[in-house]
Length: 404
Image (cartoon, rainbow, N blue to C red):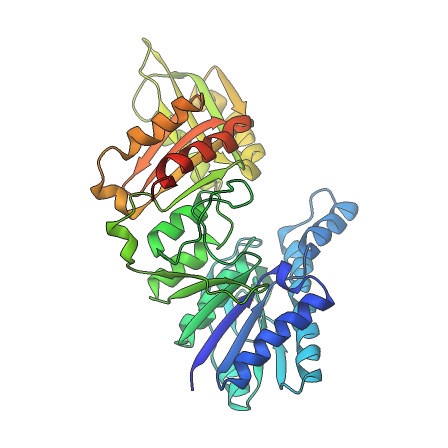
């Protein structure tokens, strides 16, 4: 008997009709003879609505209490699904993160999984039940509820699948797989049959919202093959795996954009050793993830350093730097929120000369100006004006996939 872990996102369980449709998918899998663990997200916009409720009460609620609040969304989903399945004659049990032993650190709102208990899940599977688990949540060593950050249900599913040595981990979303670009923005985007862990991780980190980056990291670490597919259609999805046949045939696997980024520039820094270390150590201590970095050539005793950070961290970055202005010795901070990062990703780039030139040619033809450039073995990212992002993404996609 095979063991399958399935995860359904918020749009898949948004209302009663959606829950019944997903219950049908679960029932079919169960009746086919598989042991089944199902991880669910909160319904539709429930998490956003809970955040709004908190804002009505407090301007700065503690992260601990926010986790207590936000964890309720997934509990609603699993209990409703259990009721639906039982009404169909399918034995089911709903369990919270702490009930299944999802152990995390104490980084409220962005906790990391430290381990997953197997005993309760295996006991319920042994009783012939479908085990419904609340995604996105766990418990720290103090016994407090923690949440894993947006998209954390993906990570919950992969962690459970890895701990149970599942035969398959399926991630059901509102799209039928991973595309070469966002099909809502790029009409010629093509669905991929398969993609490597590294490519998927880059795409997820660079703005593609199909999978949570940490879930891909975990899948790669434990060699857990994933399938991304739609809960709204019966079509095959995209397989995420270690090696694919596309590596030898496609230089670029996907094009993505990220508008949730902010460009900072520290102007007039003292041009002496250790300044970059001081800046980025401060930001590291503030738990800020810095992305693209550019340092200007020194002008006498002055230089500038520019870098990008997630938009959600912008206020914290500005405050941290201003608090240490005298120590760092800069003249001013410039902050630009009107930027976007457009990227190409592909494992085949390593062995394909001229990939960067083709990307820049596409942007030139589209009259899109580049502010910053960042490269790695399988990724090239450019910073452009936010108003040019969609045009840039379409132009680049046309350049690489017109003849693929």
